[in-house]
Image (cartoon, rainbow, N blue to C red; front, side, top):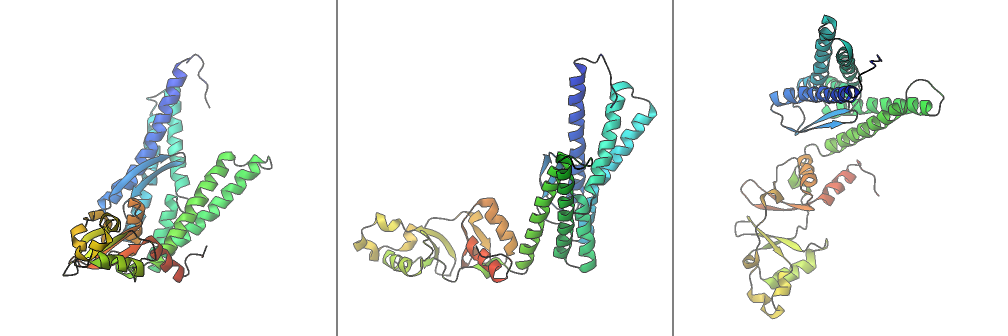
Length: 338
């Protein structure tokens, strides 16, 4: 790297500027993905700048292989455009000295960013390109994810091996950073493959398919005595809150078993459950036809243990637990028993 004696305190300032320009380049790379995703009607939840690059978190996958392809290549294309523009600036001679060196270095960093990200393995952009191609050829998005994940794992293991040999002094190729990047790729490629398996296993299933057979449900006209009896008979999961249905089968809300403590047992037969109903929050209710894979996202986002499932007309179907989804996956052989 070029040396510029006499810069003094300016060296720190130039270093800071270089770092900020690097992060700006990564941000523009991710904005490229985000722009194309938004053009396809896909909402971008967030953009995270990481040690090895960035990540644009999309609310959903592209609907078509072509859409997935263009979202994937948009980021590297932005980096290549930046490389070309910055190279032209340096080549024009407009900048000299340290600034020219910084801009020239930034140009090649953008080239390296585009090249590295186009390696054909998830979670890299090239992996998403491979996913889109396999998806197009096979007609199966999950096959695309599996192929790209396997290649990503191969790349990850290769980087770990190269970095490990370098750390041990057995090779001049690679470094500790190579090992660290390999571990990062390996972990994320494995998660992508696991998610693809889960998503395929749940494909075609809806929230109604995972409702508990013996859901803790009580009619609003039932007495507290009947609530107590029902709790003893069907509450094997230890639920302290029951769903309450109305005269038309609609969901009224919930009733907590603690009401049995608030009322003397001799008065249970004269008290109706509907008088003790508490309303349910809208985000604790899912439609019966919602895809089960989307319901998993609801569980993760809300941190809920269970959700109420209703039909389009508001009729209560039952209770859906996370454990029931896990049971479905086990039945399909997608998860090993503990």
